[in-house]
Image (cartoon, rainbow, N blue to C red; front, side, top):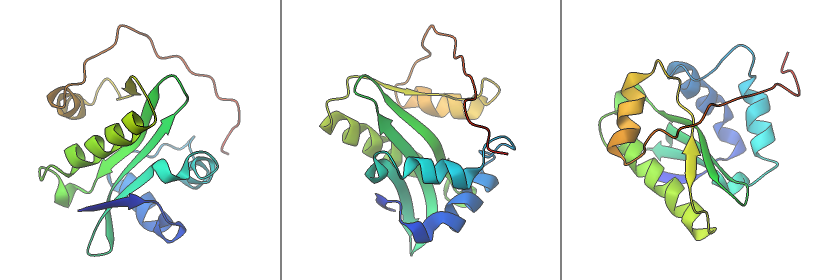
Length: 139
């Protein structure tokens, strides 16, 4: 798998991958999420490709204090081949290069398989409660 930055021609394939992996939600328009990401650190929007097919994604960001990773997805046909691990290691390296001391990510508490994946990569639960408030609706 080759990892590179997102390109506009990837949009349809990326959204299809997110839908296949169950990452989309009715209240988040994936096209708007992509457009927003392209306004801040677009080089940190990663896609994994094999034979010109998008098979993985990770949306990475650094706010000067913490790194964040969203929309980590690997096509089910390519899971268990260490592509998710490869993608996360690339995200970590890019954050280290920017001086990021810690990376955070959010996983739905019901997603035991993904939680186990991150634990195997050395991630541990933080003793925090995630709070959120919608500022702009994606209607």
